[in-house]
Image (cartoon, rainbow, N blue to C red):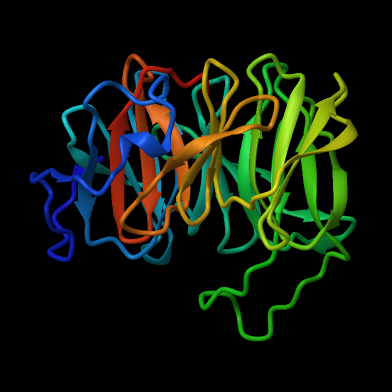
Length: 300
């Protein structure tokens, strides 16, 4: 790990608050009293994939530059020195390793803190995956990820979608790998409840969030409409509220009622809770990262 020294990254030590954030647009039981939205750092190309480690640090990606960075509560940003293979979504596994949606060659990887990589999935039914996008692990160890298809400039010339579906997949602790949901236009964000009973999947192009019941074997049942918005990344808090990223950060309670929005100066891409108390909402938004203190706490 090393400190970032890229001259393109500015405001490294300067925190900028945005008074444009309106406390009235989201219920006050969510946001801490007198909290302000703070831009921690800017100058990235496209930030994505925030994931919280057990100590509260957040790992996030700058995908076009093939970088993974680490944020801590002092607002220091360091680089995780690993070839993340242009990782998009990230999630910390139960064993403390980092699960990464490695977009460069359409793989799902697990990366330990020394940078050693293990391939969890790289093809289905004899064909390359479309491009793993976002990932979540249930308490019993099953890993769920979305496999969308966004044409990337770093892919080999002529790369085409090989899978017949843009779908959701499951990898079990024993290595079984199977498709659990399809029929999507463009699946993107994914998050589950901490009890492992329910999974939320975002249909970003059709602007819908779907909720499933998770069976112990990883199969999904009872697909139910949850919210009339799409989402890039998602997270969940200890009250069961679900946080979406689209034009703003939208917050829905577990019954699908919208509680409000947090406006961000740049379009948000992904989100998670971090810090030792899990009370810092951390938002990746294009060229910058933002944070705001909350009354609720994250559970991921």
